[in-house]
Amino acid sequence: MITITEFQKIGVGLSGFGVFFVLFGILLYFDSVLLAFGNILFLSGLAFIIGLRRTAHFFFQRQKLRSSAFFLGGVALVLLRWPRIGMLVETYGFVLLFKSFFPMAFGFLAAALNIPFLTTILNKLSGNSSSMV
Image (tube, rainbow, N blue to C red; front, top):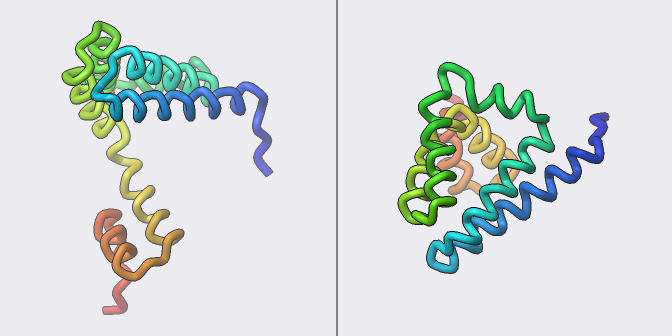
């Protein structure tokens, strides 16, 4: 069984509130204060969950420098009160950072949901083939 430390519990809470504030900021027509607060909470929650050293290592790997620059540049643009452009840049960086994770997430959703039409679409997105042929 995996043990979860108190710092990781705090990090999950911070990340959850960060995602909430980002979504709420988008819902309120890109409110720059809510988006900035959500970004700060999300990044600090990530640092609490996996640690400062591992967070820095994740963002500053050689093959991820471009995507990290887009993501962190988007966060900086949101903090400088350019929310629409900042969120576009941040979203592009997020997709580049986690593009290797998406097929695994789609495969997990296909297995977990088990809805025939949706499972077919998620299997195609994840690259898994469930046909017997």
